[in-house]
Length: 298
Image (cartoon, rainbow, N blue to C red; front, top):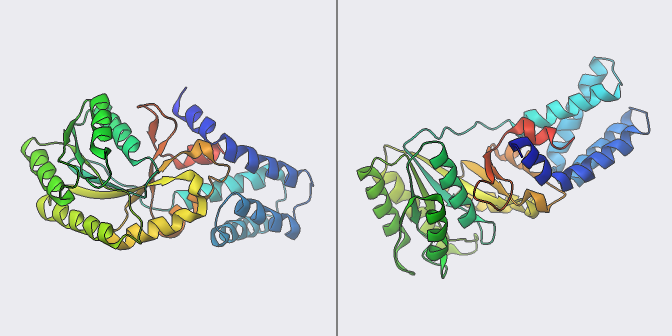
């Protein structure tokens, strides 16, 4: 199954709900103010934020009125274009080596699995990769990450449970520089903004990374569980305030009918979606493609 096929399958729950509602709307065969109000409601019910849904529908309405067009297919194309431009609004990230990627997020979103998949992906792209096991807070975190590092056939820098996470980052950076490693991926403990000590630890890790690895591009990626929906806003905001978020990795999109939240989240926070998980296997992660994502919804 190709990338589009995987993405389409993963988005099937979101697509089924969205497409069914759109078909019901167009079956009324009347495009007027009531139509646009219902279109806005459909977007919101798919977890697009109210603010973004209103902006999208306003653009479609204005264009349709200007072009004096009420054709169903034309309006659908307008909708697809607006959704694409909204999702594609944030600047993409350049992962040209050397690059250090700090992976952050709350517990249970799939950070460890994502790190293993990303390591494997970069290796397949011809890059050398080192993983830093800087989640020294959670029991067995390092052991689990070591399994994924072994699967991806990459080096891992680790320490004992309870060790200073920033010291692990320091050691990993020293190793990456000595070996001219292309990609350093840093695991961090899952945390919430209410855990002030863990957020301070994250800030310290960020400072060490910037001080010791100035020659590398430093990227902070937050892993988001798609089933979280609109609640992801508070997660991104908390981590953004702590260390700044550069991009998003989206997981578990096959488990939700409300995948539309990512459209407004990326647009309103001006943070691009970089990668998307499409399954449980080592190869099931892909570069995010906004056009393919939108096409998979129709």
